[in-house]
Length: 101
Image (cartoon, rainbow, N blue to C red; front, side, top):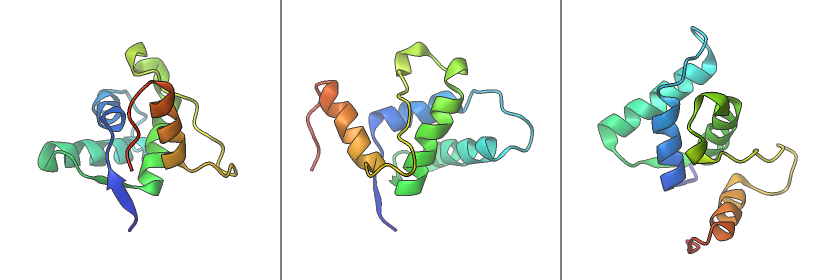
């Protein structure tokens, strides 16, 4: 399990996605509700690489129901060599945030 600490953006995205209207029984709904439940029970927790990737993809998919303040970027294509962590570091760098090691 190669997890890393959740960013503020990811935390806020999970909270925002928890109020989205999903189709009944869809995978996206179960994924988001599971992450939101973990936040309510554990607070901050580590996300795996795949969870981080799918969170960004789910946020982009439902961006029309989310606040424009989140500014959800288009996720990289899966065959790109840039990892989700590198993509997040690039977004943080572009927004003026200090890079984490």
